[in-house]
Image (tube, rainbow, N blue to C red; front, top):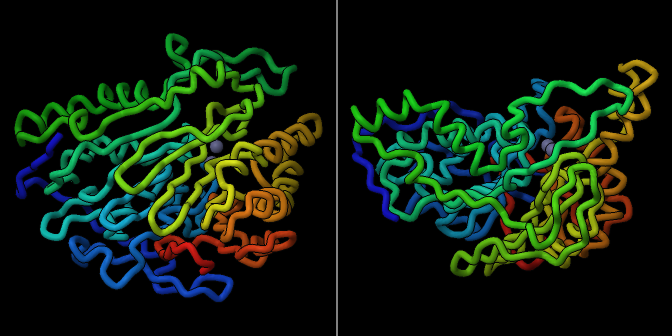
Length: 390
Ligand SMILES: [Zn+2]
Ligand SMILES: [Zn+2]
């Protein structure tokens, strides 16, 4: 469907989170800083730069605000004039505006080039800026004439995870009539929550309804798994999500117990393949999805930091908490040797860094046992994608 919004509608803010701009990234490779928002983006957004590229918008893992200068996790995959965004952690919407990647050349739009948004799972450190994108979209989509932005993510789930630790009394369930809404249901609740603002703008400003700007898709895995948040996702072949011209997007189930379903996405482009892991422990499905990928963008957690956190809690739950964190994420020691190497991925981009204030040197230990190149993601520092090693 076409979307044509008057130029007089209010535009996006231009707060500058220019973390990492112009920095030469780790491992000796030189990357280009994303174009600042003040510069025209289209039709020149690809001029002088790689047609296909990865742009980390946010690189911090977890919902804890650490003041590290890193934003909540979000990764943009840019193919020509199209921008695909995986997850929208806290601050990532401002990062998108600061990057200028999705902006219109003549109108104050921050979403002109966004083709799709892909949620790996519904933890708040991956979705916190979705309410912001959705609610402000009527004012930030000026000039967009393309189809609605496709949004993919988990569907609603009927079951809840076990109470942890098991000795604890059963807590009250939040929203018992719908305790685990998926991306479509969640967005329905957002529409109600923002109804006053949306109705006022629709009636007074002739603004479009955000419902017409986004096309929501619950990923249907009913033939693969009756989702059990405490269960191990079954082995599965990658499945097709969307074929957008010359970009093919596939996904798989990863293991982020007790949050389920959790997805990883693969983008096969004319210039190479990019896989984004989302949150997962070492996952055979992910390794299959990332087979021979040119770039594997993968989460990572520092086990030593987990030990520090565990030491701060009472003895009875200390070891259980440690295991709980380690078993739902991938450690520095695992991500290169047990994931990147086994997948045959040529480049490994580390993101969703937990903690977000580790020095790069700690993350670069992922090189042990991995024959490809390790890159520690820096926000708004573009990683050009080509079929050769960077
Ligand atoms: Zn996370
Ligand atoms: Zn998570």
